[in-house]
Image (cartoon, rainbow, N blue to C red):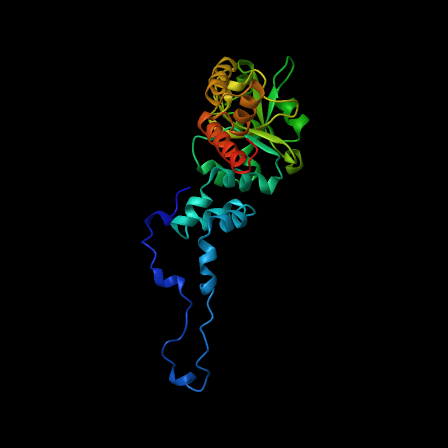
Length: 264
């Protein structure tokens, strides 16, 4: 996430020292020589540049607070810009369980102040109309048209599905959303499937593998490179949202930990 932290000057080592009064003021000449100036940047300031401590703190922040934290310094920016924290902060207000896919822009994670970022995927069947779907999902007809970039009700006949606005936050509770770029709506949305997942619609996924065949090729390549079985390769592919580089990184970290722990 872009922020002002990128332009910060080098940190002066003197800020790590406790802030004490070197020259007593005439107004405080009667006070003890051991008096110090109370400051939030006192001797504990070194804790605020510990990445481990920052990761612990940032893991519970919401998106707006995470964005503000990224503007404090380069260290804070590097931690706050971590994809893991952005996804967790995106899920936190709505109590989502999983988010699958990678948006084309990092601003997607930050624009999460309303339900407008989410949609329900409805596979169209014979007899569906925009009006009947509005009644079924308790939303407005115009909201469905606006979300799907439809000029009239006739646009429904050329599509396999419609995106339905999420009207109740409870629908997202413990749910799984897929970051998708819908070709008709011409926008990225976090899509909720009330019945299963995007079977047959995997080409919608942003930042992922376009086809099941392509996914199989990548997983087979990961198996050979990692020298693992099919299930292990599938696992690392899934937790990395279909990003092979992220999958290799996760696998390398786990392997390193197992070696340090003497497990292998």
